[in-house]
Image (cartoon, rainbow, N blue to C red; front, side):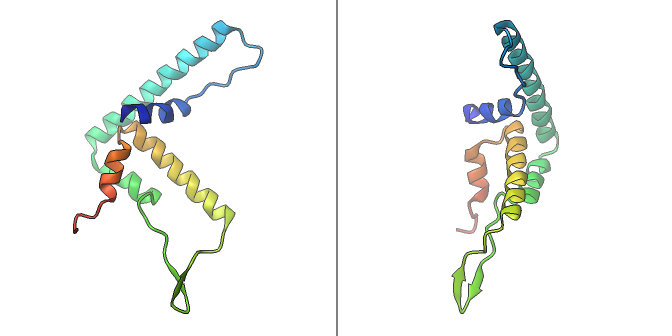
Length: 120
């Protein structure tokens, strides 16, 4: 599961590299970006370990596990009208939450387990 988190964390720390940069400059920039990503992941892992409720708060405020409300028209479920602004805002919030959860070392398997209903 760690391999699914690494690209997410690394993508948050991509350096801007000029097209005319020398190979040494590119490798140095990537090394610094990897160090920053490692520090970021350690910081959020420590926070999640010290405050376990942090993970649940991130999931709740981002709406990752929420189902969209059903809209009924004459007793038939209808999809919501497409609102690009709302969709972009929700996507941004969920993307940030996924990035922070990846930094907290929450795997996709653990996220799926949180979605399961304990009543069944």
